[in-house]
Image (cartoon, rainbow, N blue to C red; front, side, top):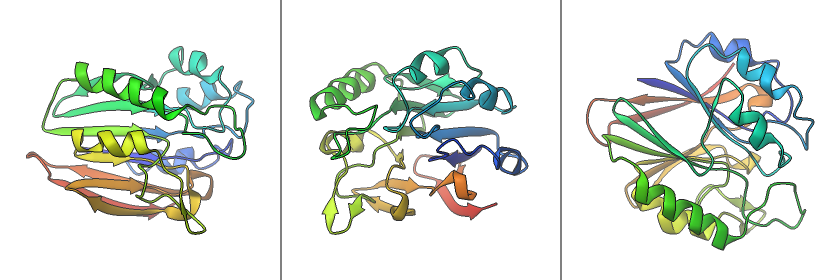
Length: 212
């Protein structure tokens, strides 16, 4: 299965058709769909996506986006889990606290509680994927010389084979920590994305960083 990962649209939806032309089997949207709102266009965005789509909100999305996502053509993954064939997705949206008091921030205790509950109830399959707007602490999370990722996500990441994250625009990349792959696809507003190739066996996950 080929899954397209995009994130950090920040209200710029002009590349969606180009992303869809890549003929992925499904799409993941890792937050910051809007740029502090408005949420009115979000439902229209997901109605344009004609493949299974899984999404979480980002820290720059207003709180009311949760209700919009729940009623959209996408599957809202915040605090939820879902299995699709050999892949299980779990999700956590928003971010740990930032200096900027953005709309959708969670305490580390809230993140820990949501992830603990989600992991406890999720079905383990061949590929177990965390969809998170915020990166794990110490992984693709550098701003200047500071690590700004979530310690709670880092504490739970070993429950997964792959972490799909975003949030830090300058940290586009793919890495592996403790046997767990982590990918930040870059800014979808600039046409950046990642194609994830899931194989038939555990840990058979290939990742391409692409630009449309």
